[in-house]
Amino acid sequence: MKNLIVVDSIDEWPKQLGDFEVVSDIDYFVDENFQDSKSYRVFNLCKSYRYQSSGYYVSLLAAARGHKPLPSLSTIQEMKTKAFVKITSETLDSLVQKSLADIKSDTFELSIYFGKNMARKYDKLSTELYKYFSAPLIRAKFVKKNKWLLSSIGPISLKDVPGSHKVDLISFAENYFKNGATKKQIKSARYSLAILRNAKEHYPPSDEKAIQRFIKAAIHFNMEVDIIGPDDLRRLAEYDALFIRETTNVNHHTFRFAQKAKALGLVVIDDPESILRCTNKVYLAELLKRHGIPTPKTYMIHTKNLDIMLEKLPVPAVLKRPDSSFSLGVTKAENRVEMREKVMKMLEDSDLIIAQEFMPTPFDWRIGIIDNKPLYACKYYMARGHWQIYNTEHPKANGDMDYGHAETFPVEDIPPKLRMLAMKTASVIGDGLYGMDIKEKDGKFYIIEVNDNPSLDAGVEDKIIKNGLYEEIMRVFLKRLDRKTKGYHE
Image (cartoon, rainbow, N blue to C red):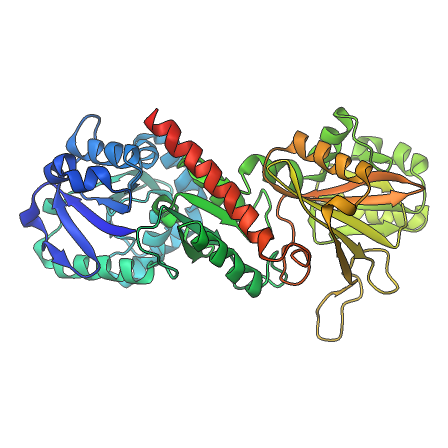
C-alpha cells in the first residue's frame, strides 16, 4: 500500500519526501485516482477532526474507499470520550508518574509526532499514548493533583507545530514509514494483513517455517503481509486484517490487540470472543455443559464448597487454573492430601478453579477447525513417562519442555463421531480457528480443551495437506475481507 499524507494546505509540507506522497484535503476528496484505488494508507494531518470538518471527512471517506485512515473514526471518537481518556490514564499511571516526576508546575503538555516527542526522555510515554490514540499529530495534556493525570488528548494541526520542530517532525515521519515498512510487498495488493508474533515467546504457536508459509499463502491471494510485535498496537489501523500467532490470554496484550482490531473493523483471528471463551477454563466448562458436549466429569471449586468438594472429588484428579495453557497451570493430584494442598495453592490466585476426573490415554486427538470446517487431524502422544503431552513438571537439562511425538491423518479418515464432536463444539465457540483436544476411551470421545490459538507448525499439522493448510486459512481471511468490502459498498 502507498503512504499518503493529507493536509489542509499543501504549502504546509514538502509535496514529495521519502516514501510518501502529500496532498491537500480537497485533492483527496475530488481526485479520481484516490477514489478508484484502494491501495492507500491515509495519514490525516488536517487541523480538526470535529464532526463534519474536513479532517472528519478525510477519515470517513478513506474508510468508505477501502483505504486505511490514521486516525480512524473510532480513534477520533475515543479522543473525545472522557471515560476512555480516564481509563488510559489509569492504565499508564506508573509510566506517567515516572515520566513526569521532574516537572515542577501543575500542568504539562506533551506533543507527539508520529509516536515521538522532541525530548527523548518522553519517548516511552509518547509511544504508549500513541498506541491508544493513533493519530499522526496529537497533544496530551496532564494536570497534577495528588498525582499526575491525563486530562485530555487530541489532534493538533501542522500550524500548531513550532517551526523549530518541523525538521524533526519530518524525520519522525520518515523513520515511521521506514521502520513500519511492509516486509513482503506486492504490487497493487488487494488487502493488507498483520501477523502478530512475539520474538521472545519460548513456545510460539507457529514456528518460523510455518510463518513463512502463511506469508507465501497470503501473497498468493494478493495480500501484503507485515509481521508485527507486542509493541505495535498503534499500527493496527494500517491493516485490513490481523492474524494472531502468539499464545493468547484475556489478561494479556493479545486480547487488547484482538479488541482493538475488532473496534477498527479488521478481520481478526483470534477474535476477542473466541479468546474469552477458550482461554478461561471456568467459562469453557459451563459453556460445554450447557450445550451437552461430553467431557470428563468436571467440578468447580471455590472456598465456600472446598471441604465438600475435596471429599466428593475422585482421585486421582486433574486440577486446572482457569487461564492455563500449554499444560502450564494444569496439575494432577494423586491422593486427597495432595489434592487439598494443590487446591489451596491454586485458590490463592483465583476464586474458582476446575477439577476433572483423570482419564489416562496414550494420546489426545487434536482436530483443527476453521470457519466451522475440519482442517487437520493429529494424534498428540503423551510425553515419555508422563500423563500430559507436555511435561512441564520435569523439564530437560536445558530448560525446554519434553513432549510426545505427533501423527497426522487425513480428516476424511478419522472416525465420523470424532469429526462431528469437533464440529459441534466449534459451533458453540464461534467461526474462528480452533484446535479441539479430544480423548478417546472405550469407543467414546470427550472434549478436554478448546484452543483458540492452536499450534500450526511446519511438518506436523501440515503434513497431510501441505501448503493447503496455510492457503485454506488465508482463503478464510480473503472471503471475510471480500464480504466486508462488499458490505461497505452495498
